[in-house]
Length: 153
Image (cartoon, rainbow, N blue to C red):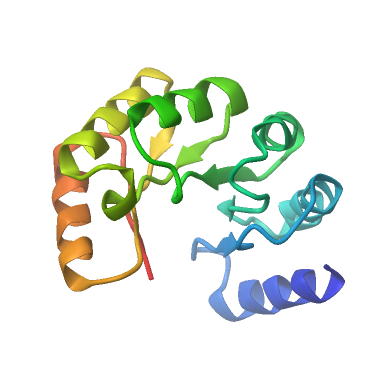
């Protein structure tokens, strides 16, 4: 984790203070590690810590979101608006990331985005696989008021 912090410190130095930096952990940490990392990244002005815990660790996400000075983003592996409702209501994460190819398509993603809006949290679509998915995600972003950008990889 110390190496991860140094990588982020180097990225912040290279990018400057005006650039948003988002860190994707890829579900590699346990709760105490994620809490340590969130605190360590606070002074580096990191926009979010993405997927720090396994997707099924809702209790861990709840505890992390309660104590993290950095926004917590998750949800790229969830399917359906009911699963996202549970994620939003039980974890209180800051940002949800529906992936249109996994969550049930554009109509379901729109429902999920409405759930996020009702909970006053950001919805930042995740798009990983194809140009078609990126195009669909851009259409979703254009149709909702609370998506500042997308998470294209």
